[in-house]
Amino acid sequence: MRALVKHGPRPVLALEDVQRPQAGPGEVVVDVAAVGICGTDVHILHDVYPHADPLIPGHELVGRIAAIGDGVQGYAPGERVVSELHTGADRDCAICRSGNPQICPRKRALGTWVDGAFAEQVRLPAWLLHRVPDGLSDLAAALVEPAACSLHGMLERGRVDEGDAVLIAGHGPIGLLGAQIAKAAGAGLVIVTGRSRKGSVRLDAARALGVEVIDTDEEDVARRVAQLTGGAGVDVAVETAGAEAALWDCIGACRPGGRVVVLGLCGQPSVAFPWDQALVRDLDVAFSFSSKASSWERALELAAAGRLGGEALVTHRFGLDDWEDAFAATQSGAAVKVVLQP
Image (cartoon, rainbow, N blue to C red):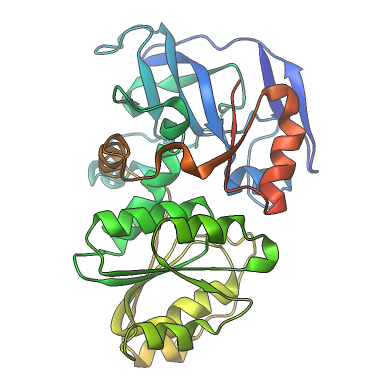
């Protein structure tokens, strides 16, 4: 089969013929229908995120079961599925038993440490699967993984609640999905920030969601948030851009006693942090990584109910042959979400 393979400590991907995966005990093989390109995939391409070598990246997938291994129950060939990423999680340690396999020390994530879905087929542990509801398109289903990550940060870590004022720093797919998740949770005011100099398409997508938008190339975030909230600040601020400036914006925009959640991967060993400002305002600061089963279940419910924008965020689609154009579009700022369709 054909697959995109990352080789060596340099930004090199190659479309190659590789051996088709075989379903072992407790596993399935899935024909990949669509797979999104994530910021993590770009970090892997440029060797700023640890990963196996060689590696087939890709983890934001939807597909149909092609083969089932011994011991798999409850699934049949032909069923459409999406998958959590926690390959290797032992399911028995205290962390896993607390419901958090996404941070199990033994986890070897799909598309990072084991071969992922930038391929015609992918092998997956059956316990990580979720069925795709009827009526949800493949393109919309490919957004469920980033939606689950955003939901975990917004609701399970940030505890966005009805009536909250919410700032989302970053207008990429995670931020735009987060805006819709916050609205679905009953947030009273949702604000999305982003830079127009990196391309207006994502800011335009945010405006289309009916939220307040702050162009950080034109406006000061703290000042504009104060205007929108009558000087109070937001209840929850969520950093999704992986940028030091966005983190500072979140701290500066939050009300005393508010909550800050960091979702973005910065790709650097450290960044400056406004320690005293966060301390004297008694802020809760949480980091949110990946997602868990409850995140996926709620994200699928919202997607099936049409609360996550469906295919509207998918602005570019490519086949595997055009993978270079797909990555170029992802990094150019001219796309909202790019999806490969193997």
